[in-house]
Length: 358
Image: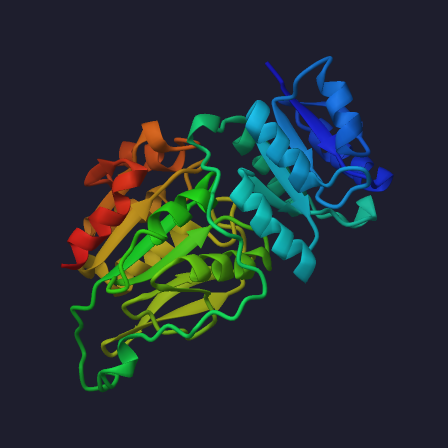
């Protein structure tokens, strides 16, 4: 049975590119490709799509208004297709709050320049969205933070000098989190309920380049802890969460007793960059039993192998349960490979982090 995809974009060229990409997969069918949400609603009276590929800025009705209308009337998996601009990234935050399940970069205008790798990412996003349990997609009622000045959040560095290089061992605890489809809302649910006194956190969320900065900024405005897009050599310290930049791998490193991150290029791993497996493997190597690994909602198996490595070093490991996942793929694979100590609901993950830290 094929997945019916409705493409909504005011650019005829983009509609053609997306239609060509989607139609090449035998499991997907382009139900229609229309210029704006008004045309889309007319088409949807005849037949309802399984997934909607949605542009943001369109005439007559913008994509966010359409998205909110769909979510209030008949929740349907929506993949937002946006541009890599500052304005596009800000709009992405509105889409996240309104219930979009996946975000992809708008393809290049010239189809001949569009890379096979990127085409696969679009196909994967559509297939992931098709599997989404919409009852678990959270619509945020929290404000969208845009271009606001957020007061600096102090870390332990404000009170304590960094450990000296003479310290060769560390007992500092860190948390590593990996997620994909449905993860943007899941991470908000977890991080916004953490107290200021929390362990250092490193995160991989499958998301396109540049959107992660706005995502981190939004979370930073909502959370007691500091949340930022990771930069190379950022320290992992209590009260701070570092999110892997889209299009880059994130690795944990240690110098003496200090944890820091490395942000680097590299090939797709487990079909992703950033990859949860890459992060988890580095955490297993440099933190081991001092780490808590958490794998949450998402399609595929990225993170399952890394979670097993974490588990085998003596780290505590947690998987989000099927009932609360938007897509029970990554956690299921981690459980099947024997790398999970405990399975918990999304609502209880922040509590588990606090238990781990105290």
